[in-house]
Image (cartoon, rainbow, N blue to C red):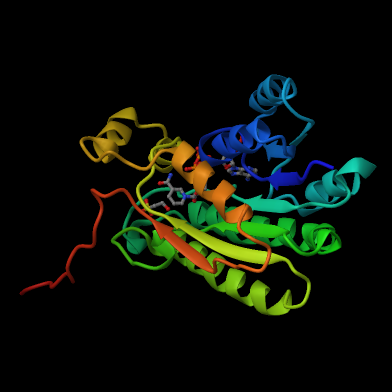
Length: 252
Ligand code: NDP
Ligand code: 8X3
């Protein structure tokens, strides 16, 4: 029987690249996101290769997510993998200039959405047992503070600690958990963060040779195909061009 993967946020970036990578290897897919047109186009394309179920759902909507998961057909009853990928950053202003609505959207998506999906799918991953994997898409922003990272970084620090906690709770079930922590990657993430500003998108990546969504998809594929007795707890991945800055010192 082909393994089944559930991916959140499959309408662009890492999630879409992941869907293509796993479909090429014959995995059955549940793909999700809010933009139904993109989901359906991807499902139509990948259905030539494997069995694909598109679920147009907002991860922040707990009742809608529960209904979508409860409605999964019987042949999607057990899952070999879950990629908790849906997420976003909004803005990069200092905390004192931030919009509380944007902060709430990040918390609701990156923390609460991930929490809902995980809790609702855990029984299906545990039913699969040994070899099942959860990959939570965290960020270097959860490990390293930077100006304007405030709540976005906080949400990704949650993802890291939640992932480690899940590992403790899942002991004995065979289900693995990884917090994948990418750095500078080229995707619509940066357009979303900057409100669609193409010039800021271009400036973010200029000359940097950023990580590409396909690199992340390949990494997730590798993580999920490790021998069943191995758990990669966390994995930070950056482009070679990206390193750390020094401490900032404000001088009078
Ligand atoms: P994209 O903007 O390309 O993709 C984000 C995906 O998340 C889209 O499919 C979007 O779908 C989905 N999404 C966002 N909000 C919701 C929601 N409320 N409900 C359902 N789906 C949602 O960005 P990336 O692929 O780069 O980002 C994926 C993950 O990687 C995020 O968690 C991000 O924080 C993280 N990350 C990104 C990095 C980068 O530099 N690009 C680096 C480190 C981490 P739709 O809009 O259709 O709902
Ligand atoms: C995305 C990476 O550095 O823009 O999570 O926060 S960063």
